[in-house]
Image (cartoon, rainbow, N blue to C red; front, side, top):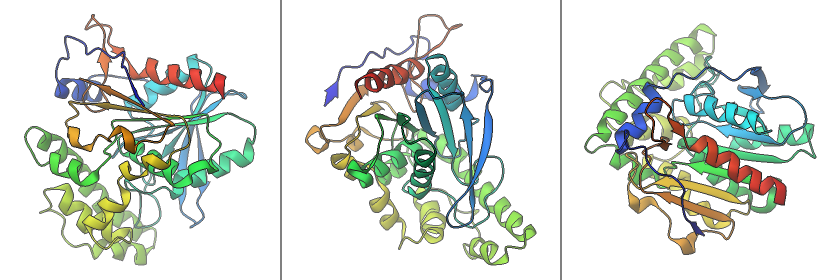
Length: 332
């Protein structure tokens, strides 16, 4: 169902790029108090690092970050602090290789990789069978979350889920980043990704994992890659078993999974998001009855900054997300 939004863009950040860049470049957010890290060994004998916030038996919220992000991303730290104040524990899944240490295989993570979130969910459920759980994903993490929810259908015990600024149709979003000012974001992300791949190859060689390092070496020279279509075809598709970039985008885009979602889910999308176009938004008849679609006129990509005072920015997501969680944890 389509719901009316309460978000109103701050007058002093009144376009998509200011909304997107301000929190990423200007906001200085300390980590929440009492943050603690745990390492889990995955079924394929690699590892994921998760960061816990909060103690006790309060409801637990699983958080998923975006591309090249981590638990250190400002939007994750801000939300963890807000959740803690409102009686929720949280745990952030650092996707493979995003925790500050390279993972131990050539593969890492991508927009459709749901094995690690499911492994984390199962691990936590076994430990805490009676705790109310929910999940929140941003951008790439939102795509992973929605795809996982759709794949699992009625098999999950979650009282709510929230996905923000989701690239629902990966091919359209990759093309959008090839145009206009959005090329600035593309250049930064691709530069970080290519640097990561090169450094990881050296790391795997140092570990003596020559077979894994060779998988990366066989990708060839990445320096001429200028678009996500090229990067995802050369790197993501090859390392993760897709036929090509089209196969990766088709199988991993989350919009096709929305009809199968059984968990009460809030999907927040901005019409001016510079990472996508309005065409990626789903038709209402393609949503399951469990989805609440909240479309804002402004907000950019994982921005959503409101408030009248430039010296006191109002990070609206840090109010809206706990609000939705409170509504559903009490009614679950």
